[in-house]
Amino acid sequence: MHHFHYQHGEMFCEQVAVQNIAAQVGTPFYLYSHATLSHHFGVFDTAFAGIPHLVCFSAKSNSNLAILRIFINLGGGVDIVSGGELYRALQAGAHPGKIVYSGVGKRPEELRYALEQDILLFNIESTQELLALNQIAGQMGKPARIALRVNPDVDPQTHPYISTGLKRHKFGINVDRAVEDYRLAQQLSHLEVVGVDCHIGSQLTELEPFIEALRRVKELIGRLEQENIHIRYLDLGGGLGIQYDQETPPHPQEYGQAIREELQGMDCTLILEPGRVIVGNAGVLVTKVLYTKESEEKHFIIVDAAMNDLARPSLYGSYHAVQPVVEKTRPEIVASLVGPICESGDFLARDRLMPAFQPGELVALMSAGAYGFTMSSNYNSRPRLPEILVHQDEFYVIRERETYEHLIWGEQIPPFLAGPGR
Ligand code: LLP
Image (cartoon, rainbow, N blue to C red):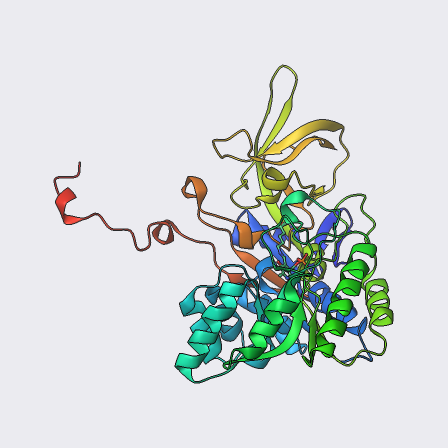
C-alpha cells in the first residue's frame, strides 16, 4: 500500500497535490510519503512479532537523515556499509547498539570509527578482515562483536548485478569453510564471536531462496554448537522484493511467517536488513517534460531528470512506472522517456506505451524511493536533486537542491596554472 493517489485526476502524495510541490521547489525532485514509510516499517516489524528481533534499515537504499530518523523513532536500527553511512546513522540519532556493519572492503579507519562508537555487530567477510579487526580492537583495548558473513551458495533468481549469495560472488565466506574461520575468530582475543550473517541478493520475489539460505545457516549454527561456539545473533540480511511492474513478491507477513517457522526452537535474536521493501514504493521522482521529438521510427519525450538522478533503468534495465501528475484524455504512444545527458543509455523508460506527454507537463516515475537518490551523481555537472517529505497536508524539504557552488566544492586550480584565465 502507498499514499500516492489521484483526486479528480490530479496526483496527490498523502494530502498534498504534487503539482503544488513542483510549483514551489521546481523540478526534478524526489518525493516521499511519511505515512507510507512508517506503515511499511510497521508491517515489516510486525511480521516478526513474538520473536526477539531487530530491524536494521539498510541505509544504502535511502540514507537521508530524515528518512533514517523515521525508522529510528519506530525502534529500528541501521545496516551500514561505510564510515559515511555510520556518520549519517549517528547524525540521524541511531543508537550505536542497533547498528550492524557489512561490506567486503572496510578500511582500517572505518573499522576504528565503528569500534570507537561501539556498534552492535561487525559482519566480517574474509579471514584477512577478521585479522585486521582483531588487531585494531587490540590496539584500542576494546573487544569487537562479530558475525561472519557466510555465502550459502543459493541462487536468489534476481538480476545478476544484485545477486550476491553464490559461490562465485565476492561476498562473504563459503559456508563450508566458515567453521575454520569461526575457530580462528574464537582464538583471536580481541574478538567476541556472537553471530552469523548472510545476504543473498536484492529484489527477490520468491521465498524459497531465503528459506534455503536459512537452512544452510542453521546447519552451520548446529556445527558451531558442537565446537562450543554459541551464536546469539542471526542476521538474515535484506533482499525482499517489491512490485515495480508485474512482479508478485511475497508479502512481508508471509516472509516473516516462513522465517519464524524455520527458526522454531532456536535461541537467538534475529536481525533483518531490509531496504527496498520499506522505501521503494514510498518514493517517486517527479520530472518535467522539456521537449518531445520524433525520429523516423521513434518517439522521444525529453524530461529534465536523467540517468544521473535515477540510474536504475540504464544500469539494470529496471522498470519504473511512468504516470502523469495531472491526468488528461489523450492518446497513448510508444515512446522513450529520456534525459538531457549525452549518452544513449540515458533513459528512464524505453519503448513503452505511455500518454503522449506534452512540454511543460509533470511526470512521476514511480517506485523510486530505494536506490534512487542514493545512487545519483553529478555527471554532466548536474546538481543533485532535492528530496521532499510529505507528512499529511504539509511538505518538508529534507535535502535542498544542490547549487553550482556545490558542484565545484573542494576543487582548486594549483598555483602553477595561475595565469590570466581568460
Ligand atoms: N544487506 C546487505 C548486506 C546488502 O548488501 C543489501 C543490499 C541490503 C541489506 C538491502 O537489500 P534490499 O532489502 O534493499 O534488497 N542498487 C540495486 C540494489 C543493490 C542492493 C545491494 N545490497 C538496485 O537499485 O536494485
